[in-house]
Amino acid sequence: MVNEQNSKNNEKHPSIFEPIPLIFNAAIAVFGAIIGLQLITTLGVSPNTSIIGALIAILVSRIPLEFFKNFRSIHHQNLMQTSISSATFGAANSLMIPIGVPFLIGKPELVMPMLIGAALAMFTDATILYKLFDSDIFPASNAWPPGVATAESILAADKGGKRASLLGIGILLGIIGSYLKISMSAFGIAFIGNIWALTMFGIGLLIRQYSTSLFGIDVNKLYIPHGIMIGAGLVALIQIIMIFRKSRDVKGKSEEENKKIRLTRTPGETKQTIVIGFVAYLVVASTIALLGGLVAKMSFGMLIVFIIFAALAAYFHELIVGISAMHSGWFPAFAVAFVTLLIGMIIGFPPVALALLVGYSASTGPAFADMGYDLKAGYILRGMGMNPQLELEGRKQQYITAMIAFGVALLVVIFSHQTYFLQNLVPPVDRVYVSTIKAGTSPEVAKQLLIWAIPGAIVQLIGGPSRQIGVLFATGLLILNPNAGWAVLAGVIIRGIMIKIKGKEAEIPMSILAAGFIAGDALYSFFSSMFHVKAIKTK
Image 1 (cartoon, rainbow, N blue to C red):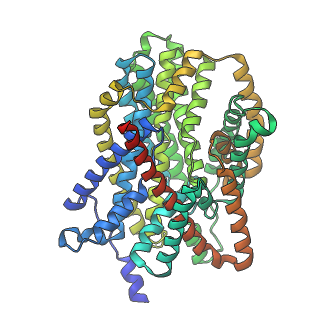
Image 2 (cartoon, rainbow, N blue to C red):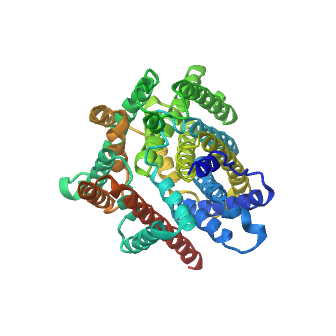
Image 3 (tube, rainbow, N blue to C red):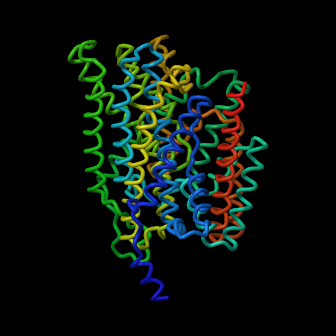
């Protein structure tokens, strides 16, 4: 046992710069970027391709040739899934959505300035998450459900046995449930995340689904979810600031207890990252304003307001998306960007500035959340922090892999976006942003946002920073996904019953099954989306 532990402590993480893995990761990043662009422009969705990347890596590792032996390592498999998922979200959410806004608003000359700004924001976004992962704000021990699903898939293939059987059953049920229009990812998430946060998330989903039929009102059209998110988000930001003022007291605890709560990012490092990150966003906002020609369109005072607000909006978007993703595996990126657009309209920014503002806001968040998922998968595969040196080195290699994948995604978008625009193919959400900019806003919208921000703030305050019930409630209200609320609440109830019956020993099997549900849902969604795209092309 001692020798085995020493072996684990001496384990070295492979480098992404090994020639064969580097070539494979670059190639799979191209594949992921193309998938992301195709689906975001035709269906308006960007799939989580982590599971696909993991399966490809697992299949490659089974090829009985010396050339492929590197991929037998679960760490190499982790780097491959990191590469494809980073490229997919990077190309689709962080780059294509932002540049579609100036194109639709009739300012094609702003596409390249927006692309430059979005690319800078994407790299900044992921870097901030890398620096904040396993801090007081974003602990590695929290849910990050898609990351759990990816890690369990890789471990099941590596270890086999009961774990593989449970995962296989979960994947099969996930595929069947998805075929029957049941949100199996929502069901699976309920077995992993914080019960309080997920309960509020499920309630929010149900209110959004049934508000019209039960109460005769559409909460979305009344901007109720947006107002609640503003209030909950502002309180969440205050709670994050309060965390800086506290330090963890680990005195008087056993070494094993200390290991469980010890974080790899200190409060000082976290505070430094937050400050430097905001300065970086100010620089990016200034770059966008300069390249976008806003100097000639706005007064100096309004320009300064725009730069500060754009940086704050980008940061707000990033942190809210990250909190939602960490607890639920879902994030309302489109909707939170829409909130920043509404506030920008109330402030009185001109249409061109609004187009750049919403594009900039939309470019942050998805890369942040996706890197959280990938680092969570790596954290599990590396032994959940029991070997700090391996964990930090592995995390660094994942970060470098993601940066390479983002670079690949940027090149794919540069060389292909004109092809999509010539076919009038842009992400559907961009049409919502542009139509809102053209329609303008009214004092009534500002009133609704202010009114509903109050209960949002109260709910978030009651739940505290660890549960994030206000943010998750608002997330549910912002997402229209039929029956997902029922799936979440059913999962929460089943989880509670199983823990009551079997105690803590039920947690590991439930987590593996949940990973299977999420993986099965992801596989079904991915392939059904690809078939849908093919059907559209043949018409």
